[in-house]
Structure formats: C-alpha cells, structure tokens
Length: 198
Image (tube, rainbow, N blue to C red; front, side):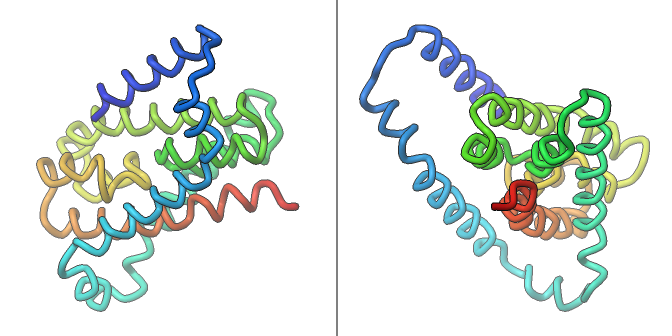
C-alpha cells in the first residue's frame, strides 16, 4: 500500500511536470468533491463490516473515547508547534495536522479551502504520517505498550495500518484501534472546516 501510494504520487508529479492536458485526469480533478463522497462511503462500508464493534462500545462506554480524544488533541498540538516553528498561520498548521494520516481527504479538502500549495503540504504530511506509523508500530509495541501503537496511526488505524495492529498487538487493542479510526476519520472533515470559517 505504501509503495502504491508513493508510486501514485510520483506519477502525479511527473504528469504535472509535462503540462499535458488529459481529459480523464482533468475530469477527475474537477470532480474532487464526488470522489471525496465516494471515499466517505467506502469508509462507512469498512466500519459496517467490523462485527462485534457495537458490543465493545457498550462495554467500554465513554472510556472508549479517551484514546481518540488523546490522538486528536496530540495531533492538533503538533500542528500548533509546527506552525510556530515554520511561521505559518495557526489555522494552516492545525488544518494540516487535522488530517491525522488521512492524506487523500485532507489534501483535497485543504486544497479547496486554502489552495493547491497547502493542499500538497497536507497530502505529503499525512502520507508521511501513515508511512512513519508502519515503521513505528512494531517498535512502540516492543518498547512501550499495545495501546500506544494506536496514536501514530491516527485516522488510518481502522484500515491501512490495521494489519500492523493485528500483527503486533492484541485483540482488545485491535478493537480500540478500529474505534479510534472511526472517531478520527469522522473528525477530520469537521476539524479542517473549523480552521477555515466562512
């Protein structure tokens, strides 16, 4: 998945450098909102396929929201720190961090709000977070604890990084990972839009 994402990114950069006008690519770019809706539907389908999720939610009650709340707050604080270090407007740093690893949604959404340059930064930043989580989850599981593995994955903990959770953590952490991914994924579009009030 990581190799495919990097290959797609490099292909897009190469295509952009050619200054060619392909009607298929132009059509996809002009219908980015429709693609985002289809992406959200696919996340909903992914959530619906996890059996036993509602039982675990009832079992944990409000405590189940502690991990996603910590991941969200930590991500936003990271955005604040980066915006101060890079001297970016605060809303831009926070909006990039609000992607929480969901590079496809954050890149397009931020491009719509703040332009292609910041959208590209958001895309790359969140792609790098996902790639970093693939390498860090085994180390975190070994030297810290299973629950800590959820944090670097962010919104991707329910889908692309879930196989890493299954391999390096336990069943309970996998369930919490899925719930974290659902909550963080739902929060991404809301948090980004709050950074650009109209």
